[in-house]
Image (cartoon, rainbow, N blue to C red):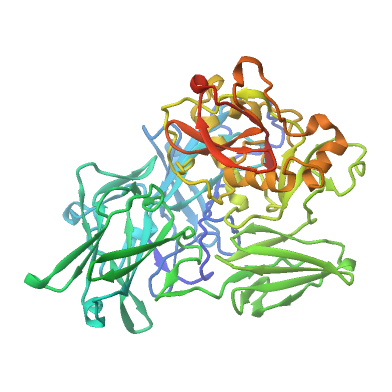
Length: 630
């Protein structure tokens, strides 16, 4: 059962933990068989990477803005592809700790280097639809609110490896997508027309929650009536919101707007033509501003963050006040400006930006973003370091840490320096091409590998794929929430890690056909333990690498690589024997265009982003260079 509370405004976090029944301090991760029934799995989980003080809270849009766990709330965990699951229950509502619901539900590790694919969801049994007499949660009529639809959570399936000191780190999100429609008056329409308009969405009206999240029932397509948004006590009939089952609505009549009534009613439909405009993904919000004209609809689609992170709109205006956790450290006295006060380590922003200034005498050089989404700028001068945070899209959690600068040399031991020879005991393995966390990228995207937040991004010194090879298998469409199809070359996501991991996990038995991904997986030197590990960059990540390179002297990355050795430069010829028929300067990204093509970047002076056939059938192959996040 879910109770109402308001422990941490706009904090989209769900954390679970169960304590180990026996100490693991004497076990090594070397493949040793573990005694049966002696090493139970332990778990933690989060929605956006934020942690204490309220790890179990979950965002809703009800009156108080928050719900929280209560003791005995159930969570399902499956490690056999969904064929069966075990039930864990919340044992401490304050901390989010959970324990197995009896010995028969306990999951155990069998080997010290074992990797298991796990997925989790809450509630354990959930069916949405309109048959409420049989216990289904109604999705077709949301005019009076969302109810328990907002409490459906899912942690996508992925591989987790045994560790004697670290628990399995689930990353939960809302299992439904949120759609917000705002109506505007166009030519030939009056205020009365819009105030009495009816808005309905189409799509799956029934579905079930399980291993793969909330999946729709084929043949259940129908209308969904959204909720009219409110601003205080005043109803704002021009804005409507509904929670829907994840699905692709391209080419379908997605939004229906009806003006007038009875015989005078006129129906207008919005049918998305772009594959990204209505590819509704779990946990994400989609904003549509629709100008209603006598002659039809004019629709503007606005990209939006994960819903429940503080970035969605309420009553037509953006959220402008957020909570920020800034840790207290002995001997460090930061100057914090742009907040309205604090409750211990929790500060509230006065607007959509704030700043923190550190003195050189504090002994630390900066902050890293452990959780949340915003832009950050660092200014150095007068014996101080000033960090300005703007365009904030969620609550934030910051941690102290050494700050990395673009152009810093990155070493095999996970340290960095502007001096190539500064760390004589550890070899340089890469160069920082982006400092700090890019908007939209958070530490929780990296499976617990970055506990101190994101310092920046590093490009390797040499190619991982040293000849022109295949991206993957042509006519195999990888399109899904982890590796979406992109028809445009203007994407801005820093999601190469997620896309690479999906390919490596999905095609682990046939990586010979995925040469670019296999090459970054096996690239040496090995990445440090406090990094993400090497991966194939996304379209935006590789394009940003090119921006510092540009294939010519006088550009920072080109000069850095060339100073180490000209062999480190991106390759610029038709090398590669029978593989490379037309590969001048071309490097694969991890981003797919469609079932036949994938995107690449040309590393000449133009930096063109284009797409090629994925395999060798058309002799349009590319090289690959790895990056990592640290």
